[in-house]
Amino acid sequence: MRPCFAAAAALLVATTGCKVGPDYVSPEMGLPDQYAWTDAAEQRPPAEPAIWWQRFHDPVLDNLITIATANNFDLRVTVERIDQYRAQYGIASADLYPDIGMLATYSRNRIPGADPTSVGPAFGGTPYNSWQVGLDASWEIDLFGRISRGIEASVGDLQASVEDWRYALVTLRAEVASSYISIRTLQARLNVADQNIQAQHRFVMLVEQQLAAGTTTVSKLAQAKAQLAESESLIPQLGTSIASEMSNLALLLGTTPGSLSILIPESGQIPDVPSELAVGIPADLLRRRPDIRSAERSLAAATARIGQATANLYPKLTLTGQFGFGASNFSDLFQWASRSYAAGPGFTWDIFNGGRLRSVVNQQEALTRQALLLYERTVLQAIGEVESGLIGFALTVDQRETLTDATQEAQLAYDLSLQQYEHGTTDFLTVIAVQRDLLEVEDSLMQARGLCAETMVELYRALGGGWTSGSLPVLTSESKESSS
Image (cartoon, rainbow, N blue to C red; front, side, top):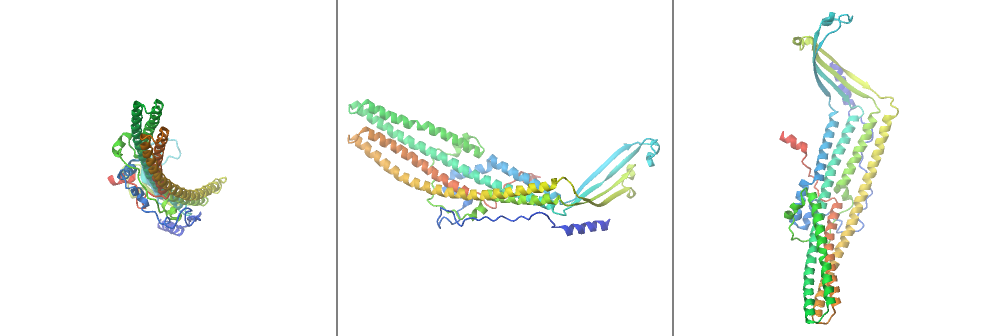
C-alpha cells in the first residue's frame, strides 16, 4: 500500500496550483483627478472621516450613535450574515481534506438451507452473527482547482459581507445624525414660532388697548387675532413632525420612542457646521466607500466561480480507502486475522451531459460581467453622490449666511414698525405684514441651518466616512467559541 499512497502524494504535489479559469485582476477605473466643484483646499483628505459626527461637538449625538451602533436591528442582521458566509467558507475549505467516516454494525442473519450459495457459518440455514467495525475515507485531489476556486469564491463572499456590514454602519450613523438634526431643527422652528406667538399676543393686547381708547377699529383687532391664530396653527404641525421623527430615530436605536425623552433633552441647538470641508480626490472613494469595496469583492467571487464551473469539465481523481474488522463472534472481531481493507484511486469524467456543464460556465461568465457592470456603476454613483453633496453643501452654507442677514434685517424692521405704530406714524397693515415676514424668515433660517448640517452628514456618508479599517464586529459564533 505504501507505493500507492506515495504515488498519490506525488500526484497531489505535482498538480497543486493547476487551476483552470481566469485569475482575478482588480478592474481599472478611469477616475477624474478631482471633483468638479472643488478647489485645492477641498482636495485634501477629509478630517477624521471615521468619526465625522464629532465635528458637531454635540455629546447627545455622540451618545445616540453609540447606542445605535450597539442595538440597531439592521446592523445586527449584517453581523449575522458575516457569520453565515464565514460558515460557508468553512464548508468550502473542508473539501481540501479527506472525508473520513466511521461505521459499526451488528446483524443477526439466516440464509435458507436450500440456498446453494450457503457456506461457512450459514451452511444449512444456521443463524449467525455479523459484527463489523471500521473506517471509510475518500479524498478528492484538486487536479484542476475546483475546490481552490470554490474557496476563493467563499473568501470573496465573506469579505463582501464584511464590507456590507461597514456600509450598513456608515448608513446607520448618517441616518441617526440626520434624524437627530431634523428633531433639533423642528424644535428650533417650534421655539421660533413660540417667540413670535408671544410677540403677537403682546401686539393683540396693544390693539385691544387702542380699541378701548377708541383709536382703532374692531376689524383691525380681528386681523391681529387672525394673524395670531395662523401662527398658532404651526404648533401642532411641528409637534406632529417631531413625534414622527422621534419614532424614526427610536427604530434606528432599537428602542421605544418613550425612552428618547431621557436621551434627547428638549433644550438643544441645531448642530453647527464649518463653512468649508475637505473631501480628497475621487480615487480615495475606492478605499473609503464600503459599497465599492463590497462590489469589488463580489466581482472577485464571481470570477472565481468561473474557474470552479470550468473545472467540472475536466476529470476528477478521488482516493478512496476502507479499513475495518469483521467477524461472526464478537470475541474475534479485533483479531488481526479479521481485518479487511481496500484502497485505490477513482477516476471519473462527465464526458457527455448535453452541454449542461458548459452552460454553467457560460452562466458564471455572464454573472461575472454583471458584477463588473455593478462595480463600475457603484463607483460612478459614489462620485456623483459626492459631487451632489459638494454642491448642496456649498449652496446651503450660502443660504444660511444670507438668511442670517435677512433675519437681522427683518427683526430690525419689525421693531421699528411696532414703534412707529405705537406713535401713530405707520399703519396697521404694515405691522401685520412685517410681523408675518419676520416669522417666515426666522423659520426659513432654522430650516437652512438644519439643511446645512444634514448636507454635511450626507457628504460624509457619500465619502464613506463612519468606519475604521481595523474595526470588525463580534460574531455570535466567536462568542460561543470563547464561552465554550
